Amino acid sequence: MNKVVKDVEQALEGIQDGMTLMVGGFGLCGIPENSIAHLVKMGVKNLTCISNNAGVDDFGLGLLLQAKQVKKMISSYVGENDEFERQMLSGELEVELIPQGSLAERCRAGGAGIPAFFTPAGFGTEVAEGKEVRVFNGKPHILESALTADYAIVKAWKGDTEGNLVFKATARNFNPMMAMAGKITIAEVEELVPAGSLDPNFIHTPGIFVQRIFQGKSFEKRIEQRTVRSKN
Amino acid sequence: MALDKTGIAKRIAQELRDGWYVNLGIGIPTLVANYIPEGIDVEFQSENGILGMGPFPFEGEEDPDLINAGKQTITVRNGASFFDSATSFAMIRGQHVQLTVLGAMEVSQNGDIANWKIPGKMVKGMGGAMDLVASAENIIVAMMHSNKAGESKILKACTLPLTGVGCVKKVVTELAVLEIKDGKFHLIERAPGVSVEEIIAKTEGDLVVPDVVPEMQL
Image (tube, rainbow over all chains, first blue to last red):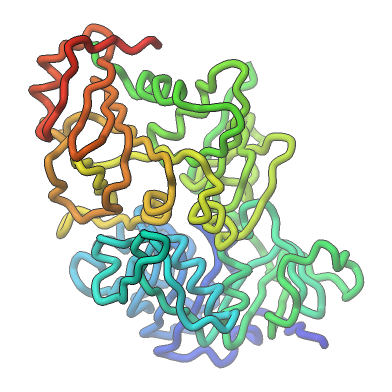
């Protein structure tokens, strides 16, 4: 089944005001840069974005925040974004902060047909407020519900025309779970190859989870914390 | 003299045991990787999806696709592996990781920890900290004994929103190594040249002080 669309415009067709989007990536690593730039251009508003982080002020999801296109963010860590913190503290932006492992598992559950699950993370904290608590093996756990999205936008290293995806290094992060949890999943890839050129043994995300795939035009791949050691 | 951040990291590194998988948080905990005792083989897990983290890359060899949970560029050791975030937290919640080292704003004498939010002022988010502290069997907190205003961070009860309850077993600060048990802090070691009196004065929580408090051997 050929999932290829011509470009980012075709890939994002159908995204409208008020929709819920999942956006892959950890910090600026493994984010769908081309798609985010195009969402800014489309000007869709009142979005709910589910993404581990919120980018930085002038890159990643920070671009959508700057343009006031986001109504609500569901994330685990937003410390690198001053504009985000400003909008949140002033009440302009609705924010749901959830433990990173629960965020990952909620996406996975959403894609896997598991409506909810119990986890120890967040018990006794404000994350647990209003959630069912049950004790298993003598330890309290809280009930977390699955997450799904109207569109999931992920970024992969290589993808084939069938939508099979391979990620590189730690750019994998949330992308595979989000690909599972999108009603429509859009994959932006660095290298789009014909079916048959990727070894089926090494596919990370099977094409069944991907509805549209396109080759990204350019990738800046900005580094947030460039840390090096000297050769001497 | 009180330790610097490097000193705290060196002291925590003494807690590493051969064969452990270890998750290091951002800040002082990251430095622990630089002081692994000789003859000990440990592997570092970073929750963004890597096991077998190596040192920072040489200049010019940074890979934007290869970072740790602090978003710093890193390298891999032989035998490393990459995985997605759900698998990463399966390792953490499933207790396959033997030690977690993380920073804190406050720790209380029953082992509660607060490190993600100051209401009305600062909200960075908990990241993976809540999953880590809820599941790890062995948690060491690396932090300064007092905040910038000079107030103790070693408390009877936390005042900030909690990250986890009853989970911290050990705290290493620039002044002391403290163990938490039976609802109290126990003074285990003091930093070289730091007096027991100073530690008592800077600890708000209940502190059990033995007759002899050895100096840290760094």
